[in-house]
Amino acid sequence: GGSKASLHWTGERAVSVLLLGLLPAAYLCPGPAVDYSLAAALTLHGHWGLGQVITDYVHGDVPIKVANTGLYILSALTFAGLCHFNYHDVGICKAVAMLWSL
Image (spheres, one colour):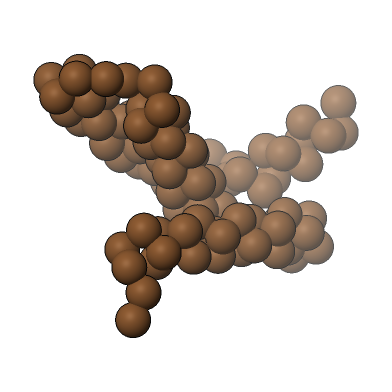
């Protein structure tokens, strides 16, 4: 069995590889499945990345708890916002395609 840190590291790498596959999928076969997969993977990737920034730069028990609470709120709002955008608007794939067409 692996340690919690090792499993976390493996999970981070798996999400990164998943994102590498989702990017061409978003171009080649855009749709709700890819939109929601991107919403989840991008939110998780960003959450872990900002969590590492907190680990590196925030010190003291109370500031760390405040920063982590803020991070969880930000991540939840990000995921909810992306899901709302996917459901009520054009979705991530089509939005990026529209930006590229400018």
